[in-house]
Image 1 (cartoon, helix red, strand yellow):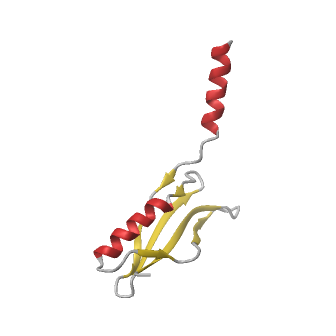
Image 2: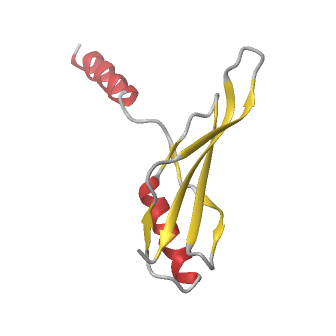
Length: 103
C-alpha cells in the first residue's frame, strides 16, 4: 500500500516540474553598435522555454569577443509567429531578446 502511494506521489511530482528549456543562440546584432541578439524557437508540439539566465552568459561572451563591456538587457522580448496552421494556431514562433553591450 505504501509503495503504491509513493509511486502515485512520485508521478504527480514529475508532472509538476516546469517544461523543458533551451539556451537561446546568437541570431544577429551589430558589433559596432554593441548590440547582441539572442533567439529561441519553439513549436506547437515542442513548447520549450528559453533559459534567459544562460542566454545572459552567451551575450556576455559575445560582447567580450566583440571587444565590448558586459551586456545589459533591453526591456522586453519580441515574439513572432513564423508559421500558422489553417485554424490560426501558431505552429512555430521565435522569441528574441536584445542586449546592449557596455551599459
